[in-house]
Image 1 (cartoon, helix red, strand yellow):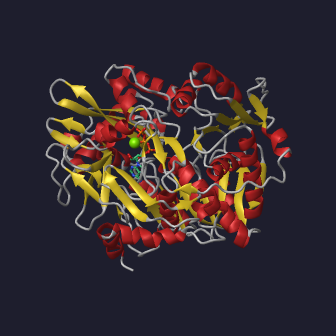
Image 2 (cartoon, helix red, strand yellow):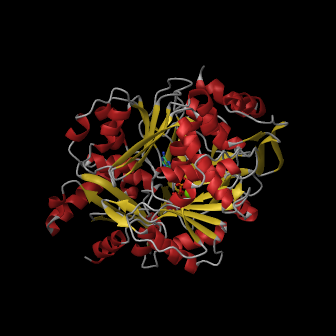
Image 3 (tube, helix red, strand yellow):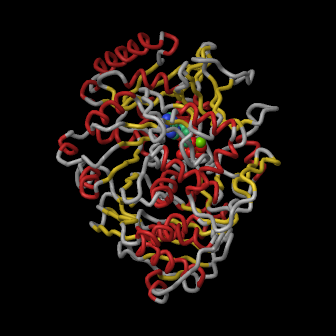
Length: 629
Ligand code: ATP
Ligand code: MG
């Protein structure tokens, strides 16, 4: 079928469209209404239908193909590797569910999961889904104060954690961080369930802390029936990355999410039962929820959970996994591919990668250089996809499962089925024509799988996302983009990051893309900085491939001029950065996103703001030093 017709049908007749897609999953009780949008912007999908995410991800396949691989847990930190079949996965999930029930967790209760990338983390998520508890996975290794604020927001009855995570062979004591966080929090959990990996000492708090292995041993033969949930009950809470400010607690449903994931696995990721899916993300992020845990399993695929760096023991590790497990589809982020591009290509050329059919990248703009490099190295299509924690699955991409439509460099693609995407003029709210820049919005209702609300705060949901354009029922993505005449979108940056130079509106992304095309630039961040004359000017911070070139003041000056020349040539002098600084590292969130707002704040001499999500605070120091030099 042609994608344009498929998309049009999803927009013109959403109820008919999603009724059809709902057949991709099992329902215990059929729904009585596909969509209830009587209280916009709150949408209810598959009203009165009863289903369960764990049933669809695990039991369904255990019943029909129990011996097939379901979860492959690989750690290059502890040098362990274990494959669980669907039958084994179901048994582990039931044990974990039995332990949670014994600890008093009930339907609708929150369970906070603060875990490294180990199989037990997936068991815990699926166990919650099974018994109707709401999980809130917090990225393992988040500092105590970030964890404390998430504990206070979710008010969990139980926290599931481990003694430690591990990064580059170094143990990170999660239990200590957790104790500190509980100390700081006001909503103290009644119980803490701990997986002891033997990586760090772990003192148990009497009456509160319990050891998972001990309790599991008591429930080896546990049978915990699935709790059938109404489609609109909450399945989980997940915080956004915190790139633009304080993270928002996204609440998701059960039925709509299951259907949307099943559809995306079919039309976007083209996953077939029995094949292997490898997403290199972390369960602390939305990609980990949708495409490490739930999506591939719902599609009957084996999924890989990898704990370790992409470069350890060497830069070939991912590709050795692809070879060994015959990975069919892989999902990663541009930032990780840029890391690999700095390594000698021999590492990836060593492996037999014929099983691999496509690489999906998301999370940040995919620059042309990175995209072309990895496509040439792997010899498979590279498919960009644009979405958010809030939506749970791609908004823009190319759905190869429907039509083999060409990808376009620099563009994540076209609007996906179910999404009524528009670009609106920021001041007038008028719809933009082809090649006109605007704010990317989605006309309500949001399709199945997207957020239901901000957890515990309906008003914040309405105020944050639905109030940008008054009088219009549109959801703002807070991204800024442009669409070409063929319907391909290009993301130009965050709306917060738009730079206004003497009345010209420029996306940080446009300038970054241009600077990236310079042969010696491996990565760059552009921010708008206050300027008395022009309002704002662009300032760039670049990481070089060959840093020697900037070792002397003369070298730096020549390179800066050279880079300015590239921007002048490609975008015009108005986009030329006022300064180009050279650094070895850029401030990023733990999920690999550039923290432009913090760079900007430092440039303007302000406090860098909420830094709970920053990966390495030393990177901000580098920005300060570069400015002072
Ligand atoms: P916060 O909302 O807390 O500031 P965040 O927006 O970074 O954090 P996520 O939901 O993880 O949190 O990221 C979604 C955002 O990432 C998008 O709104 C967009 O800015 C960016 N993004 C994701 N995928 C792409 C892509 N393929 N191309 C360009 N940008 C992307
Ligand atoms: Mg966001």
